[in-house]
Length: 308
Image (cartoon, rainbow, N blue to C red; front, top):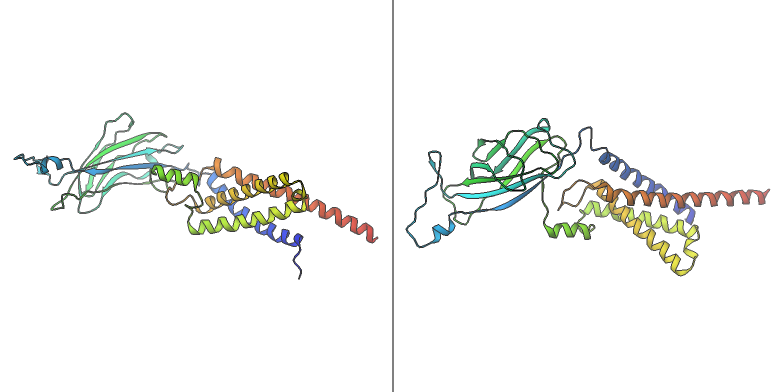
């Protein structure tokens, strides 16, 4: 069986329709906010723990500092700070909190106390209670978009290396909150903005490659059939370059909807940046396909008249 350009266009068109339908279904799911409850987005930032007595301990003095919490002495004191910000467009209301905000650490560290830090950028003051040595939990509270929390945790442990430092983490179960994100570093932000394909996971990159190949072959054949690649050199290159760039953007946006954003920055999909390439690519391919079908029908009618 001889594979003609028209049959190849038909095959690639079917494949492109399946891809576009899959992407469209995922995009619709995201646009509809993943259910009746708007999606929530919280972003955390952690500051490395410090040893407040390090300079005093290393000094050649006879100073002896004793720290007590209630009636107990605190040894190996470390101080860690963490922030949390509602970076989404929807408020987090107390009824959304299946499990309210908590601050946790890992053994052998123990959290002695948690306090709200007074800074110019924080508006929310939480009420804390101890669950166990590794976790403090807050009372449910309202977090409007843009609200920030800054807390200081005081930790201790027995018989540790003096250079050992603990980690603290936010924890919560909130309706339609996939996870508490960690604020990306500046280099990660630049990497995501400038090299999106480099940061795609292997399945997402493979999907983008297949989608781009499908879109490109189909678009190239349709442009050729439309006579746009037989025009003057500059126009021909302009049409082909523009179409290829649009194919590439649509493929990457489709991979984003199907597989999510790169793992280094697990943020929600931004529809304003991912939606337009998909729509424009579908519109371009659709218009070229309609033009191709009309030409085929015209030729078929002309052939029928000649045969008559």
